[in-house]
Length: 149
Image (cartoon, rainbow, N blue to C red; front, side):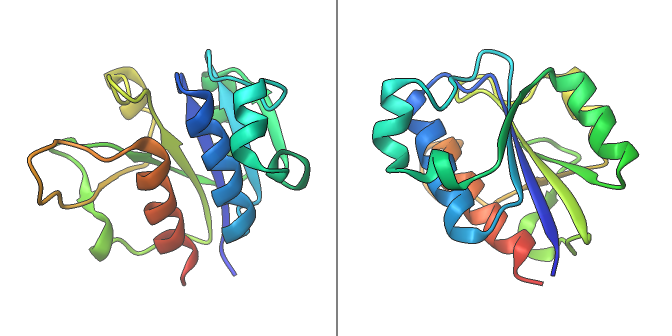
């Protein structure tokens, strides 16, 4: 079974972090990394949305560059979830055995410097009038796909 970590970088919304924790719990994500100014599980709104998942999911506060480097050293492929001309469609992407899904800020996405550190970039076809989905929803879809192998 594949191993998946999620890196949540500069997520603004505590509710999105709580939702990510619930998604990690539900799908069996091995670890959630909280980097940048992403709210931590002790934030009241994170805990309210997580509904206890903050206690069942392994999580760690980290610095993004060091965390990416550490995970690469451990054999993880860093996969950025971003609308980018280099991104491959999620539906055609073959998940590696050890993956770390990198999520960016709800408004700005992943900075170009972080995209450059990714081994792969993936995206999902959008059909509506908006350019993107809510970060926790997009992460849930991508994590499900990466773990389905």
